[in-house]
Length: 599
Image (cartoon, rainbow, N blue to C red; front, side, top):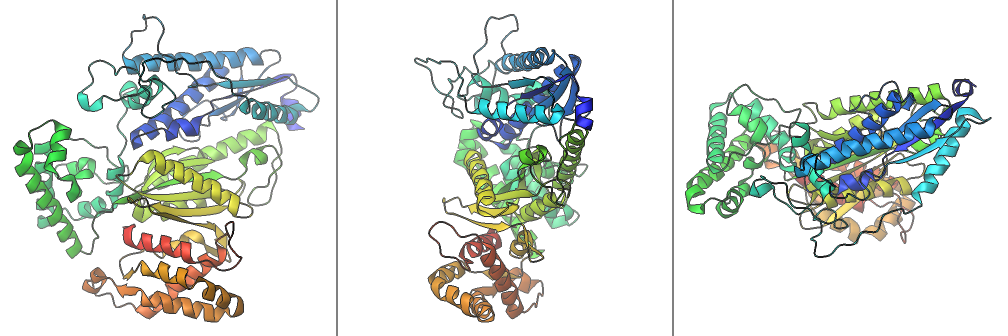
């Protein structure tokens, strides 16, 4: 009843900016991804501000337009009767004005110039307006939802005719535009107008940069080095690395937020720009010469010295029980399950409650989502996780995280989903820092979709990898079952050195699949004993653990690993063509990968 009294005689307006996932996914770097996310958030904020200025009352986002964490790409507004359509049109006009200015800035076109290059479909602002009816707010909400669903099924686009034009390298459905004048050669690219806005977003907005994949992948290693800068041999190796890198190029990376930044060099340089240079394969004279437009002979001595320093640093850190820098990082995506149904009063929260479709409740949920988003960002940017959030909306999350902390990041962000919200599903995809970011994000989204589809009731966790060679695997699990969590079980494979796990384990499990399935049906204790035997055959003590004096029993480790694989195999959903029963092979492949690369 509260919703009906609050909206008596008021129009119900929804303004939304669709196509967000595609716009974010069409990227070549982490900076592109973050820029796309920020562009959508700022456009949504402009729409919300325009609605408020025209006399509308915000429902989503609650309170004021704000921005940042928890800013949805959909704005819900209550408007005076008969004025809803005008307010929506004003919001669309504000979005278009903002976008027009960005395109002109990105391409360095004067505002006094004529028409700017077209960007069909970006932004494709959509709105609906529902007048008050006898059913009040709840009826207006449902009608608007149906209208927006119908609108999504309509393909409305202007005809585009091109002749003799190169196509955008990121979005080949659009023509490329000439790079803005004055760009250095290394910044020139074949991009359409919309992607030039994305690429030059940080310059347009005068923002700091965004950490690269290589900086994120090496963050845990660099954290350990920075903690040992007081050790003279370590500090000397870092100093040589810095001097050599600066002789080759003045490359300024963006610091991973949770990484400590010492007051002076070489620590300050190492925290901000050392990410790429800790890898010996970075020190290739010919490739660096092409990148810097320098003669290979001029930089060769610095390159040799830098490669030696990077190798020396790895050896020094290994002596201090710190593994070499990881070659992989992870993209983490999370989505609250069936949020649309929940907001429409048709789905339950994690605690079992159903939402009353009323203004006050929707505003409350909007505030809750903002709190969740803020908490997730703080967790991700903490020194323990060293993650780099791209977007935190409360019901939707996208972040890049070092391989060693990815499962902990997923777990910590999942824990923050409050009981008065629905459950959330998560996908974690590990990929090589040299790999294409576009395909990695697409694979992560596909994993999340599969997880939601394959786990009954959703609330799923998918963990997968794609090696640089193209080999890939994924395991899909319920987030929680039998008092255990999938992240905790898989986390066993990432904790500390301790032991090595041979890739032949997965091959043996696959070979013995039929026999293991039979044992699983007949005698669970015997099944676990056979799993333990197979794991033990492929387990060996890690040399770093031996050097550190680790005397943990390999037999006990084999039992723990086998128990984890048994749990994961019991809860892995069957895929088309598979018989019901235990299937630990996929989890074993993922576990072996984590053991090798999550450091």
